[in-house]
Length: 324
Image 1 (cartoon, one colour):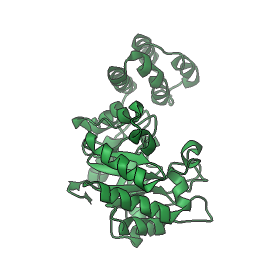
Image 2 (cartoon, one colour; image 1 turned 45 degrees about the vertical axis):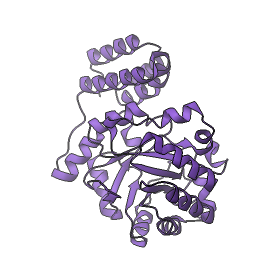
Image 3 (cartoon, helix red, strand yellow; image 1 turned 45 degrees about the horizontal axis):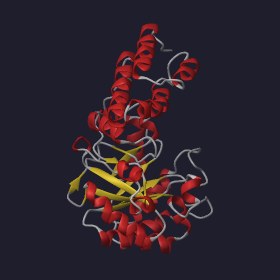
């Protein structure tokens, strides 16, 4: 699959944008495990154009995570275009437009999945961003606002007409959030309806589910979101299965804890231990969710404040051999 001059191997997968999760530390770690493309956390167009410090921090991309897209969101074509131009200061390989976020805070202000209810505005935003920058522009969407208003095919066609290089389709509506299985048939319909690449997203958690998604949708590439939480090695598993039909097992518990510590040490290195350890709590909870006694450990994870405490907890988990 090509996005401008960027070529992505369809037998691999990339990391989907996830607010509060897919930060620089996590993106780099996923690349080390075989993610061949990553997308940043979504950045507010209003925030960036008003020179918000946090918005700018979200856009920092390192050479360890290339190729990488910067994702932006908003509801005003002119502001989105200005945001895209400012985003280029961080040298993203791709600009991705969020038209799928279901969070009330985003959709309630007209951004994200709210644009699924106003396709002329969505098209105007895409066109404005495409005209504002020289890198490929992609669009991430859902199937529609609800089951009664499927719009993914029409939005994908409008995106293609507006100059988008590709579309990513999460196979659920906004109303469905993350509850039911993804609708692979609906993603396949989008693929049949446009000539630009279509990237599938949703419920890819391992090699077999990745192969199933590719087979049932005919899509060009995959983005993995929740399937990578606490499991960045999922990208190695997907590549092994798609390229060699080899199923890689989950790493030993000791290796999982080593990866967790490497991940959280990197968060602290980039953000400082005080901020890093607050953010580390959710990541640590994902890393330990399958171990025996996870509920009790989660309580302790929620109170972590130092790397030393986390290291001691990881040592205890490995020593106890907490696997079912």
